[in-house]
Each structure stands twice: as structure tokens, then as C-alpha cells.
Length: 614
Image 1 (tube, rainbow, N blue to C red):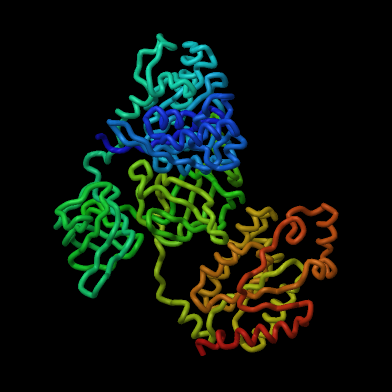
Image 2 (image 1 turned 120 degrees about the vertical axis):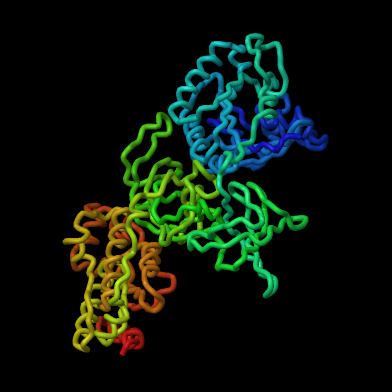
């Protein structure tokens, strides 16, 4: 029997994807008698084929799917013939569920793109083809379905095939096989028929039985991301993972990335016992001699061809979050088995799904495809996605909700990632702090407009200066006159505003100063990003708390009144959210405390930290 084939069935809504899978299951003898009896009952209640059995209901398992006659979730089904076993993903056709289609494409060897013969190529047809190509699917089958509804017209099929090949050529899909089929009758899907005497090719199922499952190109060097470090006792340390490329043998020289340390393979353990070698797809545990420091997320590679390491990339993105992508916002990147902090530093363009044109974009919204530059907070081992799915595919995770925000594929590392290195300096932050007889610190005051941040920050700055401390105050309004004068108040601009200020505050702390930052900083993820720039104990988050009603009543600049009249847009607390800190280091209630009392509490909180270097 040939190796199993994983394929994704995709296309626009109502093209008949679920019926195709239902027909495959039924005609391959994969439907049990009790399932068939239940299907007959469900067809009466939910079916769309009148008195006939509706085979789509074999796949559409969710209640909403059955009632609406659509696919929402990705449905996986397994079936087999005497020649091969298949795992098929039935991807939803509605645009709003595009992210679910990406899930199915991410592990597929082949894509079957379905087109309704009556409607021809739709925008989702092109979108799904782009996503399949983005995730490394190189074999594409065009299945023109519902040929029975166009009276098996050859010209209809050939017209759709010609148009689709134009789309595929533009996307870069070289291998396309086209089939005219009817899932309802099974013609040319699972069996030949007399309905289309003009078609002399194989059935779609016969083609799938013969399709080749992609293998590593000959000569690819060995690569294995470490998923788990096994240490059952003090005498054994093994590194487990699945070989992503190439082969490895006992005695081979290897190099561990990103550290670059060298070692040799002492043994290879797998299910069933030790072995002499392992190849792509094998799950193994390696032991090394000499033993070196290896952690989850490292990559073991051939010594003469080590894995690339970088911290800046250009990548394709499929945005999967309801909240738009904001340049500069921190996310978690999960690349093979490694997790690092990452930000999108620039959106190069957004792709028009229908024609592939590159469009200028300030953000990416749900289901948008685009190309962007990313930066990680530390170097990571990787490979371009075209060379390795395992080392070049990643997801971005929202730090606040842990939701998957995007799926992406690495195109190449940016040149500056290799050319720009961190310069070590002889005069350190510790030396500068000791000269100032203080411990460098960032005091970050957050709260809504008119909550009292600037007043408290100014009083704190004066008090610390009187005590002989070396400080600098970064105030939100003042910074927008210079460093951030090019930024507005949209969510994207607010994110960039905080990123710039956080980086400036880090430089001031590195200079040994006490940086006092008074910014609304409405988004929790950006405040967490700022905290992450500093060492433990160097960052104090102060929540200056006052209700919207009190802030609006104070309104020293008249901004709330303008916002409530609609004269100012994206105003925090009115038509733009403020995300309250969940665990601030200090909360100051300015409705009950005077500014002087707030500073007393704040200096008491800071006193032990500020005296750390005296």
C-alpha cells in the first residue's frame, strides 16, 4: 500500500465539498449500516436533496452546519481503498471562516479545489488557492463539480479550466490537474460514466490513489527541532524530536543552533529500540557526546551545514484575529518548538485575494493576506518555508488572550539581521548607577486622560530631584511635540507611540537614570511589552485610577467634551478602550487621595528599589 495522502478540499461556499467527501466515504465502503440509517433520517430533516440521501450530512456534524447547509469548522475524515489510506480536511467555503481553511491546508500534501460548474471561478477559489500555496501545497487538483446541472457541457468545463490555470500561474502553482465531476451522481469522482464521453482521463479518486507524497529533496542537510529534553536519571540525557529534513547516523558531527555548539551523535533511540540512523519524519531521541547545553526549541543540525539563525524576517501572513494587526504590537511567535516575543515592524503590502495585486496597507484585518517584516526578541533557528515547512512555518499568538492571531511562513531573513550586531560597551548600566548612588528604574504611570498622571509624575520628579536623584520625566503630551509628532491617535499609532517611549525609557535606565513615564498607554499588551524591556525589579507599573465620570468632570483641556460631541475620534474612554492593569505594582485612587498623598505612597514603594546601589 502507498503512503497515506493528506489532502484539503477547498473552494467557495456551496461548491459541494461536503457532498464530495460524503460520496467518497459512501462509495469506498466507509459508511456503516447504522450510520446510513441515521443519514437517511437526517436527510429528511436537514437534507437538500428532496427524498434522496444527502451525503453532505456525513461530514457536516455541527448543528448550525446542518441547519444552514454550510461547513463552519474543519472536518477531518479518514477513508481508504486497497491502494491507499486518505486523510481529508473539509474546509469551510465562507470567507469569515477562512482561518479554518488555513488549518486544513497547513498539513496537506495536496489540495482539491472545487468549483461549481454553474458559477465558475469565485474570489474564494483564488483565496483558497493562495492560502494552499502559501502553506507549501504544490499539487493542486481542480474539480469542476455539478457538471450534471450544466448538462455535462464540455465547453463549460474547458472554460473554467482555462480561467483557473491563469489564476494558478499568477499564484505560482505549476502542477494543476483538472477533472469534471458530479458528486451527486459519483460520475468521474469514484467511477467512470457515459455522461461525459468527451473525457478520457482517470477518475478523481484514481488520481488521488496515484498522487506522490512529497519527500525531502535529495541532499538536504539534517535538521531536528528539539521538542523535549529527557532526563530520567542523572546518567542519561536525551533530546527528542521529529527529523524535519535529511538523515542522521550514529557518529555524525552536529551543531546546536542558535548557540552554535558542536557535538556528535552518540546514539539514536526510537520506538522499538536503538537504531543506526534516522530520516525525515522519524521521531527519535538523540544522545550526544560530549554532552552540551541543549533546550527545547533548539535545532540539531549537520555540523557542515548549520541551521540559519536570525532575529528579523520577511514573511507572508494570514491574519486570523478579529482585532486588526497593529505594527509594533508585541505577540508571541511559535516557530517549530520555540516560543519567542515578536513584533511586526512593517507591513509591506496586503494581497488582493482575487487578482493578487499588492495593495498598500496600514494594518491587516481578519482573513487578510499580506507580507510583513517581523522582529523577534532573540535570535531563532529557522529555514525559509520553501526549504522546510517544519522550520519556516509559524503562528503569532495574542499575549493577552492566547488566541492565534496569525499564521505565517518565513520568506527570508533581513540583511540587517545578519549585519547589525549588539556592541558590548565597557561602561555598564551598573557602573553608571553606582556613580549616581542610585538604582536605575523605570516608573510607568498609566491611566486615563485627566486621571492625574502628569501631576503626580511632576511632583515625584521634583521630590526625587530635591533628594539628589538623577531623573527624567517623559510626559505623553511633551513627547508628541517631537519624537512622536508624526503619530496620530489610531490604535496602530498608539501602539507605535508606546513602543518608541518604552525604548527611550530603556536607554535612560541604561544610562543609570530614574525614568518617569506618564502616558495613558491604554493597551495591556503594550504595557507588558514595556515591562519586558527591563530587568526584574527595574520596572514599576503605577495605575493612576479615576472613573470616567470623574475624569470627564475634571477635563482640564476640554477634550472629553469635544470627544463626546464627536469632534475628536479615538479618544480613550469614549470611543477607544482603556484596558485596566490586572496586577499593577501600585494603584493610586486619585478620587480619594490628593496628589501629594499619592507621591508619598509612590516614594514609599520605590524607596527600597532606588537605594539598591547605595
